Amino acid sequence: MAVNMPRGVWPTMVTPFTDTGKVDYGALEQLIEWYIDQGVHGLFAVCQSSEMFYLTLEERVDLARFVTNQAAGRVPVIASGHISDLFEEQVAEIQQVAETGVQAVVLVSNRLAGPEESDDIWFERLLKLLERVPSVPMGIYECPYPYKRLLSPQLLKRCADTGRFAFLKDTSCDLEQIAAKIEAVKGSSLQIFNANSATLLASLRMGAAGFSGVMANFHPDIYVSLTEEWSAEPAAADMLQSFVGAASLIELQMYPVNAKYHLRRRGLPISLHCRSKDASAFRENHKLEVEQLDAMYRLMKRELAEMI
Image (cartoon, rainbow, N blue to C red; front, side):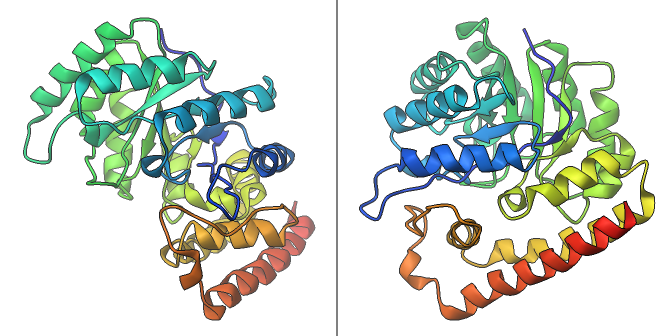
């Protein structure tokens, strides 16, 4: 059975590590509190931003449980951790993550079929998976690694018609596709969350439910303002959209190391250590990019306060 997900901002959470490479649960506790203080509407734990492909199953399950327990019902938590190729291992992943108490387990779209395999094969495997985990609410993540498998509107409708899905993290970056997906799932419990900053405002006007992307690790409060105020404050929304679209280019520069550097500048006790990137390659120019973005963020906040 699907659940209703609140509209708004769902950060794709980063995982703090100690300098020796272990998950830093003390830093994670403070990070969760920071997200909530910023006004986010939900948390997407154990995703690609969390470096889930570099975590053991035990670590993925422990992360999902810790985030759920720390959030303590203040915001809903969803989690993926769906990284295996083999069907039985996927069943085990989903069952164990579901037992942590998350609102939904998010399937990675490229895990169900290879790039050369058809949508019919993909959906057939999905139905078998749903049969094995009959009571688990689900989401879908069009994860770009190891390859991006976008769901067509027709396939997404078939997913929605099962009644099991509540969340799609759309990574198409294509407004025509997003509009078609929104239309395809209209009237169902499945909601579309855009991962792309540049198309966010336009997608909200089309009926997208909100934002779930990496840039909510930099300035989630700006995304909260945009998703909550876009209709009532159109001039402010246009200004915010211009900022988030341009700011999102920093995602191309040493993410998630740069996000951790930003969070540390915001006062969180987060090491730059990552498993997916070599933090020693994070150079002074990368630091300057984050620092200059922070300065632009502060200017944006002052302008926003005068407008709203």
